[in-house]
Length: 366
Image (cartoon, rainbow, N blue to C red; front, side, top):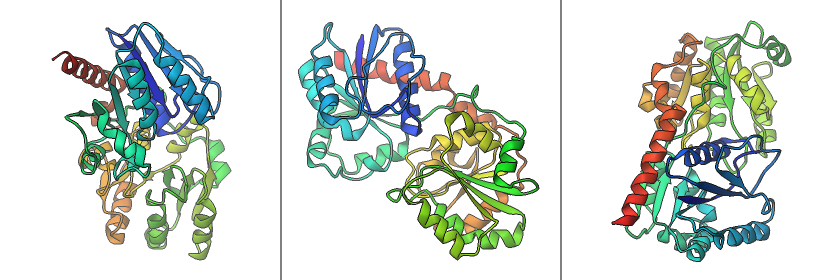
């Protein structure tokens, strides 16, 4: 079996979708029936590092829509033929459809988050998505919201949640260097880690800032550490100043993958309770570091905490509920990894992925 995978990014990139794609490509390569996986990324920010066996990583299409399309077309004509084509993002459906026609094989579309929750803005994508043979969503929430608008032709759909590699995360003592960098010694630390994009104001940062004065009344030494960068950072910084939160909010900016675990470990609780998460790898990372987590009842982050089994669930639109949930998380002992986090282990991810591949291939033979 040869598989062609069209992805936005994977090796050499950061972020939740890139991490999911790295796991997906590794799992596909590990399938007993797989001979080769050919992956074509759209973006790559830095050297990709070691690649899994059986993976051919074609980078001739980077940073250009036309070069990317040309690389995909060339790959589609390659021999021996491909058994399946994976379209790693709904926005790649048009080129995935073309590749599937050229290779004369079905394509599978991956569904991640809000981009799949409502009709695609691109008319061509909205039309062609119905021709996918199968869909794989990172959460049941994303699967249901996609099926609520998409017109699909007898396509099968599956859920493949994100995974966590506990070898890169785990409980530990706060890094003294970070405590000094951010002035956190002797403070209770509430942490959010995510993009601060003006197009993604659904992560709940505004809502935490708005109740922070009430939280400080209860926990006077509280600091809200916001890790991440983007086009919305200046507005959020101004909002914190206007609320008189000097000394209680720290904007850390973007941190490297290597520094992430240490940033989790300085926190007493992690909060990202919004209404637009398609899943959220950050919840798994925080829990793997033994940090109590606050997630949302309104999006797929509830699935990351197993409907409240692994973390605190709140309605971010309810200030009192959000405040009480954060206070409850701050009361919990840190350094304990929830036993149920094993549900999201990479071994379970790989097993689920292989079961989905087998189901898709079996359906083709009927």
